[in-house]
Length: 480
Image 1 (cartoon, helix red, strand yellow):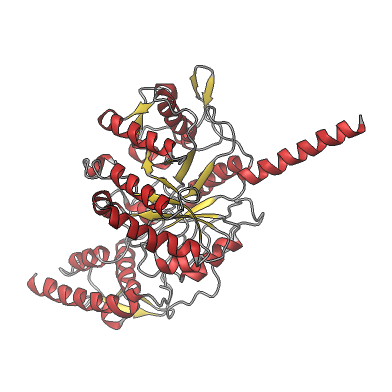
Image 2 (cartoon, rainbow, N blue to C red):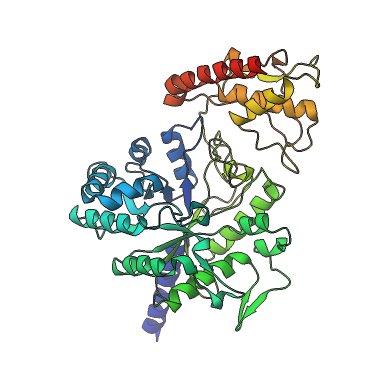
């Protein structure tokens, strides 16, 4: 009896250990579209100090991969969409890419590359089918190149897809792949399955709220929506679960019910829209992480899941075509400082920020107190500054939404000034601007001071770019 009890206890302990192992180690997306990126070594230190064990990249930047050497962090490297055509049409190009960006770092550098992400959301409706003929061939060629490099078992291919590749009339069990790409999706899923590779999907409850003013706010979070959806006995009180399980049903209906799923991106932005704020982001991400750490999945996949938070750091160089919120997905600000308290499992006292960050001087470019708001140069000056810097914190119910007209102009001028490394000529808006050493920040609206970087953008291309912008500005204002 004693031995039996011991064995039962041992089995229970091992199960707990395995469960904890499965649900530990949240991943993050590390985007690099910043005008002034932190050093890669600083970011890797942040990852390790926060206990983040997996990172998803959007390319294969050698500086980043070198920084990840022997870090113990698992890596998903990415292939941008603009490379799909070449890789789809040339096996030699695929082999060269794998050799340069995977083999070289796995073998000699000790980088733990687990996945190659072929493309990034290539079937978005907004792309109008641009990548539909190249994604699968590129995927096949990269897989063949990995096999040829003897990495086929160690490194798996996948395609991060937006949740718009599947749809449902009402409930998750209605789910199937989008009609216009249905056959293509089945081919891709079949190929992934044949190579023991996962399906990667990006799920954004925020977008549901952003796109539909009538969308119930509480359904976007994990706090128990009061009017849940009943899908044949499966209860859905949040849109993440419903979205995820719509995919599960789509896979199941097409013969791939057991395919592993990676949630490649999930998160909430903190600015640039009335629903993008610190409170909602903390509420969503903590709600997601609490479930993740508990090993709680969805009604159709109740076990632990594999996921990557989106994203690590704000990216002030991202396109804002989808919305101003695009530059504010980070758990950390541009300087590596945490935005809010978040328990991701490794530390109970919140996120650990970057250390040793060097800032430019404490000075700001603002509208002259004596400037006339009716000056003909005001509108084009603000337009120029915002087009060439970042004004996405200005707007209705954003972090700087309460600024008056003078405050808005000052914010635009300062953004341009900081992006251009506080060069004197970047605060020369005709008769309108002045440099001050008094912080104009107010309340939640922070007038940033840019960090010092050693990037090529700052020391070479950035200087040339700035001189071009100054020349354009001169011509712009002269011709008015």
